[in-house]
Image (cartoon, rainbow, N blue to C red):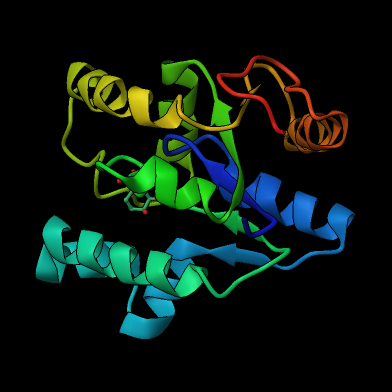
Length: 179
Ligand code: S3P
């Protein structure tokens, strides 16, 4: 199994910010699937969604995932929807230790809406966002480790992740051991 640290979670969980801190503290590189897609497409995620639609973007995520098989020893931050398809949790675990940055939905959504354009949230009511989250949660739950971001700064979350990785036990809760 490859030895990457793979961050998953809903939009607004802080995957990019925590990933940046983790990469610095662990002396690794940060790879973001959204950035891979933007680089290969030469346009932003909202532009891709607007011009091509969601299915096209999901196919680009599949290609990004295929390319990640070549990576070792990195921190990988995934887009919020990437883990949420049949077979994806296993494919991500094959890349390394999968860490779910969990949190309370309203907080996640508030953070996501503050943090720039999110096509998957645009025009949705809170109930629709909750439905999207609930459909995704079973996929996130299949991570090796869960770290709760509620009330924690990105520095604290990164420290919790490192502690969990080093101890072989989760900082908050887990569905699976790190072994
Ligand atoms: C998406 C999340 C986004 C980005 C795209 C779709 C999703 O990434 O991949 O807008 O479906 O949840 P973040 O989770 O970094 O916001």
